[in-house]
Image 1 (cartoon, rainbow, N blue to C red):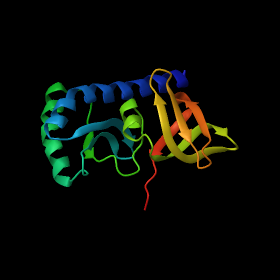
Image 2 (image 1 turned 90 degrees about the vertical axis):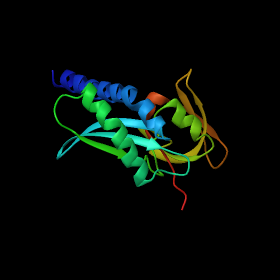
Image 3 (image 1 turned 45 degrees about the vertical axis):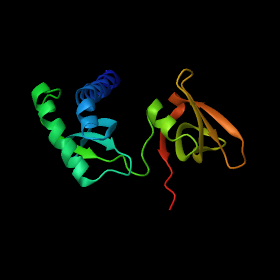
Image 4 (image 1 turned 180 degrees about the horizontal axis):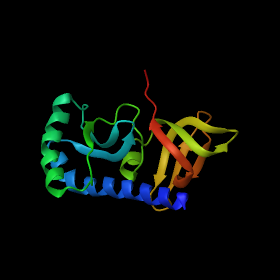
Length: 166
């Protein structure tokens, strides 16, 4: 019973994020940015709707303010969320999480940090080059420093982030 409740709650959060994505995508693009991701998450202070935007050359505070001013009336008018929440407009950051096909395509050839649900070669995490993503097969191929490759089904990947080089 608890598991079913948690699954339904998780699906509801996912549906809210997808609904918001559809509502604000055009407005974000009209501001000269691209919509990277939308998350609806709870923290100790309450619910947060986080809209991640991207732009060639990086995201500025002015970009975030402009997108906020563009999407806030859309969200107020359509009211996709029951109850109160905090709206946050943010950059996905240097070590951004890759979740969608477009994300993988944009960072092919880049070094990424990978976390797995189950161990691979004795570890649940590794760093490698993102070599390929197949949307059709729902797989990702990584190339290691020794030039060997490994293919993983996307459902086996807990998290993939771009590795920031400093």
